[in-house]
Length: 224
Ligand SMILES: Nc1ncnc2c1ncn2[C@@H]1O[C@H](COP(=O)(O)OP(=O)(O)O)[C@@H](O)[C@H]1O
Ligand SMILES: [Mg+2]
Image 1 (cartoon, rainbow, N blue to C red):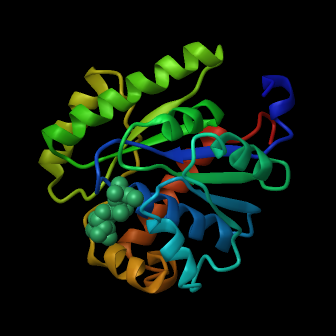
Image 2: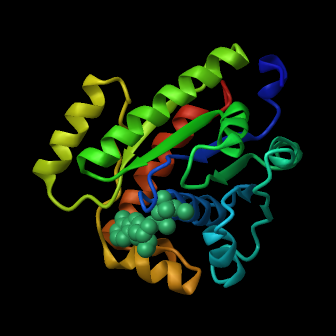
């Protein structure tokens, strides 16, 4: 993909980390619900063989009208993502909880890689590894691929501040926005919904709104 020609194409946003349960699928589903509700032309790719996002989508509540491609095969993932960028402003990709070829190839297509990270040492460690992986793919692809840690399931501000400080020191560029630990995120997964629909005035919705704005500022086509 040429950088020059890319501005006319949809932007590709990934959630990726080898840490299971860090919030990849939740992040993608919530951002998708937000942008879909805002009228964006978006599409989803479920690159995880566990198909969490596909089940979320199949419940139909909030994401039913959003096209989703379930593709967890390394030979087809790039074409699956590229095929959606022509007709959609944003293509949101949910990666598996391990670093295989599917994740590498998906990173190669990305305009922004979000690295969900809970506030503990093992999550921070894995987020840093994911950041290095993105750096290496960017070298191979000979273009910058922005990556940012995203603090998820935040319970205590003091622990989150510590995690953030570590991520900043080690150049994982944590986003200002974060997702706190709230039951409504789990409730949303059961209903195939989103906090945006379940609690439109709730804290979780405010967090998703702030996250969507921050991510859009990273990927928005120049002058758009
Ligand atoms: N911000 C949050 N607050 C509460 N529960 C969360 C939050 N984010 C994720 N979860 C829950 O944690 C579990 C793992 O989240 P998930 O998004 O599936 O992670 P991953 O895709 O990285 O494996 C799920 O049960 C999900 O409902
Ligand atoms: Mg998942």
